[in-house]
Figure 1: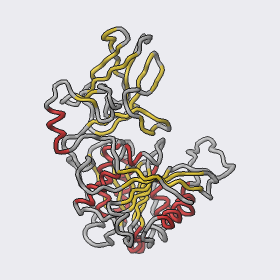
Figure 2: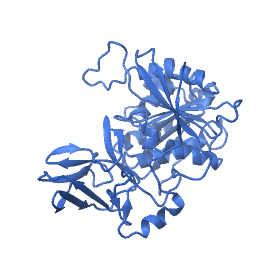
Figure 3: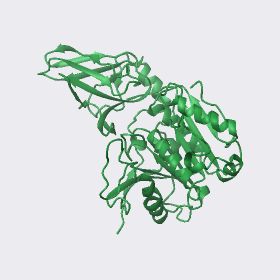
Figure 4: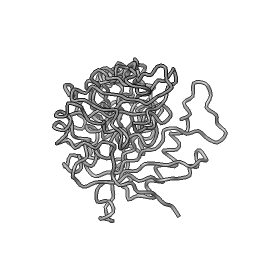
Length: 402
């Protein structure tokens, strides 16, 4: 018998948007970060977004803390050296940290390791310490007193890979009450080194959808999040391989039939969208544009290619702009202006604009980071499953000052 585990709508953030500024601004000694392990006092965020890290390492000779990425909002990946403030207790206060989510690690006598005082998140191909820094200017991904959806874990056996997999499936508020209602589906992919949990834990996709649906800004929908890796039986990932070569077949031959056979979905191509970030953006473009019989909406978050050729890329599906425009409900492309992939994304946008391929272009300040991708989803989701009406196909530049 098939089964699933229901996870009540959840989020690592414990702050409520309405009280975030008061709570964080009035405590001169700061408060534990929302990502700090329950019962621990550090990492601790001060009112000016400086962060105090404290580590117990009695035998250590040298201790530091560093972001995992060169464009991390925590001083890039340049270490902050800690001071031993008492025997075996090391501490440092950082510069102000960029709001949002940051992967980081401790460096103890040269050994890079996770911080036992912080929650871990699957990133960099392993469980990795994460730091959530509240953004007082934003509340669209905060927990609010609104009707809540659920995130369900759906295990399945993939015929493509011959292995068991699991998908995280967001069902909107009221899914179990109105058993006659059917819903459109967004397939939402993570980036390199992450997995099917990432859009829920790091991206807050469930909270973003709950809030948008409560505000009647987005239509109720299912969101399917699966691991973007997979190889066929006997296939080994060689040099230059990411181990995701079979993922397209997983989506088309395993995942879509599973979702449509398990949940109350609407199954026309106009009721099915695919989007992703970074590696997942490339997958969304390849799978969505390569299977227009299955998808009518495609979203690319921090993706794009400087080598795009409309005559040959994606099977030449955009060679005839007029014919392509008639097939797609929405093509959405976005990137942060400080992202290392920005030039490629903008080049794709400019090429499409020049040849008359209708699309939405969304740029905003930010690098290759979850805060940008949360904003991407917040703009993308309200445009979904509304046909070709309104401004869905108006080429736009928005969110430039947020």
